[in-house]
Structures are given as C-alpha cells and as structure tokens.
Amino acid sequence: MHEAAQSALAAAEPKPAPGATPPRTPLVARAAAEFVGTAALVAVVVGSGIQATELTQDIGLQLLANSLATVFGLGVLITLLGPVSGAHFNPAVTLAEWWTARRGGAGVTLSEATVYVPAQIVGAIAGAVLADAMFGEPLVKWSTHDRSAGHLLLGEVVATAGLILLIFGLARTDRLRFAPIAVASYIGAAYWFTSSTSFANPAVTIGRAFTDTFAGIAPGSVPAFIGMQIVGAVVGLALVALIFLPGRAVEEQPAACGAAQRGCRA
Image (tube, helix red, strand yellow):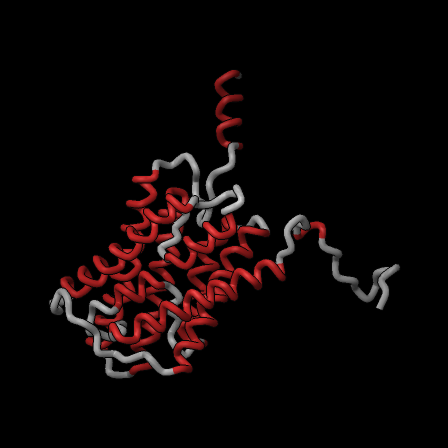
C-alpha cells in the first residue's frame, strides 16, 4: 500500500510543459537543448527547401513542402526539448520571457538569457551548414536572396507579434501543454499568410544567411529583418498585456450569454 501511494503521488506531480523553463534543469543542459533544437530546426527549414527545389520547379509546391516539413519538425522538437529548456529556439522568445520575468516571476533570468541566445545563434548557423553538407552544397555560401522590401519587413512584424502573442497567451491561460501543436500550426500558417514566409526568429534569420538555397536570406537583409522581429516581439507583448489581463483567470471571465439564458443584459 505504501509503495502504491508513493507511485500515485509521483504520477500526480506536475510535469513541465513545453514552453515553460524548468528551473531545476542544469543550465548547461538547457543551453545544449537550445543549441540542438535550433540547429535541428534550421536543418529542417534549409534541408527541406533544398529537397523541394530538386524535386519540382513549381514554387507553390516548393513552399508547401518547406512549410509542411517545418510544421512537423518544429512540433517534434518542442515536444522533445520543451521539458528541458522551454524549447525557445528563438532569441525573441527568450528575451520576451526575460522581460516578463524580470520582476521575479517565472522564466529565464538575464544571465540565463545571455547563455540561451548565443546557443541559439550558433545552433542556427550549425544547422544551415549541416543541411548544406547533407545535400552536397557548399558548406558556407552567403545567400543572394534579397528580402529587403518594405512589405516583407511588415510581414516579419506581423509574424513575430503573432508568435509572441500565441506563446505568452498560452502561458497566461495555463495552456502551454498545447504549445507543440499550437506553435507549429501557427508557423505553418504564417508561411502562407505573411509576405516574408514568417522567419519570426533572429537566430534562424542569421543561420539562413549562410546558405544560398531556397530558404536563404542575403546578409544585407538580415539587420532589417531582425529589427522588425524585435518590433514584432514588443507588439506581441503589448497585445498579451492588453488581452490577457493579469490577476483574472480565464475561468473567471463572464460566460457568453446565450439566447435562452436569463439575466443577460444587451
């Protein structure tokens, strides 16, 4: 009976949800998870882009293959590494989490963020080099894919703001367990509804400059993209603060009044 009770208590203990940074995980393990996760993500993005261009000349099919691979790959990576590091894979997410946690709340500290962000950037570069190596491309070749047009920069603001709103909205409503499918689905959709095809990630943007393939971005376009991603992160946090007011759980919000309910006022 005693052993059964212990097992029941262990099973009842809360498990870390993807997107939540587990405070007891050693920092070196979290940094390694961020490095490996970001590298794998960029390898999926770049590698699937190369594969798609080798299989078809139809740009629409190329983007479809690229986006599907990214959706599946990102979902798997968040599920696998979320309980270790929170599965940020994105400096914008890391810095946004630090900003929201700077007054002592849950999340990464500034010192932890200074470890996460370099791990993500180096991982993104390694992922691009790995993808090029797998497909026999030059290991490092600066992209010539110019993405400096104003409408593409606007697309990055929208893409990043939506991503931050989604992640921190899930956190505010205690639904981070849905992060793998929700975040992956959002990125898959944003591939198609944003003009920039939704980089929404400074580390991934830097990594994609190292490959002159379908998913590449010219180095000269990188600073503006990252600048707009930072703007998007600020917009996203502002939307979170506006929509998900602290101190009021979702369950406390008034239920919608149906036609048959009494006491509802127009």
